[in-house]
Length: 246
Length: 302
Image 1 (cartoon, chains in turn yellow, brown):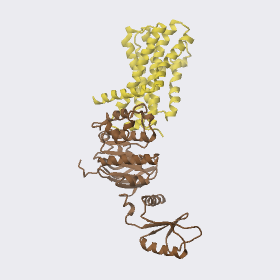
Image 2 (cartoon, rainbow over the protein chains, first blue to last red):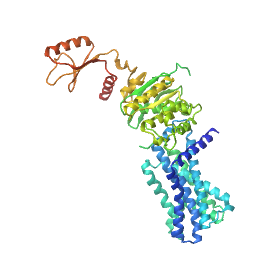
Image 3 (cartoon, rainbow over the protein chains, first blue to last red):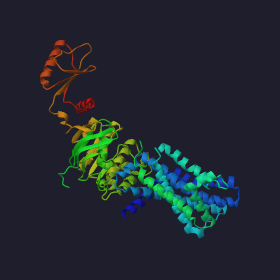
Image 4 (tube, helix red, strand yellow):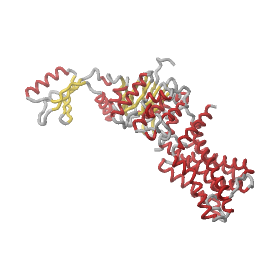
């Protein structure tokens, strides 16, 4: 199909442009590892139980950074620079362009997952759950897709590129703290627990923790993620803008 | 479609943004192979009109046909045959010129050769440089190159030289002339009189969402038929006799006349009598600028 070919081709050009900015590429990959080391040192204090928590948790963080944060910021910037509008003036189907961006974000996410999982196995002795590989892949694919869609949906509410970092961070950082990613939620106040369970980050983290613990798929967590993906898709289809907002 | 069919045909086009009527009752015909300039002040409705033709905006009323298609219904097919240079440039900086053109060429069913496109816009020497290393003028050429990647029949240029220095403008004009030489139909918007004069076969002056006049740059607004203008400077403290209809701008005087020979005779006779020199004396047709200002002033006053 011509559209699929165009989307793949778009991924290749996005990828080429990405590696041309080595500073950005370097920190994209080092950023999650920095968190992993800091959490293991300061919070885990060498406890292997903590490492077993932080490896899947940082995988979740890495996927969200590569998809949600990255897409919401870069697409808003492209919109404000007129790149999206120019694309709309060519015969390239809109979905093929966005698929190219999503494909590239997911490729970076996959690389990050491999790096974090390998880092956890090598330095903290946290085994990669090979026996749960299908469950692991399904959780990763659904998580990456959900947060790509939510990142695109968020651009509808970001007024301009200058506001993008503030809006994106404000929507995701607090959730990372209350969703079993940066801090393990043990006996959290009920209202934190309730907020946490409403949003998709918690369910992505719990699903990934389950896979790493070898306890199989948590269908309810995956179901909540899929519901958020669907809601995000509806918002994106309705409100996504190809032109700068005045 | 046949060659006799116009590239663009617009009848009774209307478009409002809320309370503001951006385009009111606009008619336009652009023939194939023609370079047509939409000339008008900022906010006249140029960009709105062009963006409706390009398929970016929906219209409120009127008929629009671009290459025989209605952009509101066949935007997909239409985009395969047109090239668009927007007012603001949108380029990702990390690809080289050649890569960017190659990327865009892949979107079209019948692209033009990448090296040929780059040569057309005069960027052959810069083709392996990254776009973020180029000067503003060079980037604008990349904009043009990307619009040409699909070998369009019809090219839209929205204020292609705004912000250029004079030499970059001349170079851009050369490129546009080359494209016209290839038989492309070009619709350009500009607020520069000299640009319209230098490039266009036909010009339409647009203000307040309407076309005020259209024709060749030489004949627009009766330039070739109407009155001539006699211009000269006088030293301070001297007054001209009342018998002429004089417009004055500082020391510069202007007299319009249907009979310039007679006017000059009377004027020089008077000057010799007074013993003054009419410095900078010249007789001219109204410039495109004169016509433009007259028309747009009248539109503003109305």
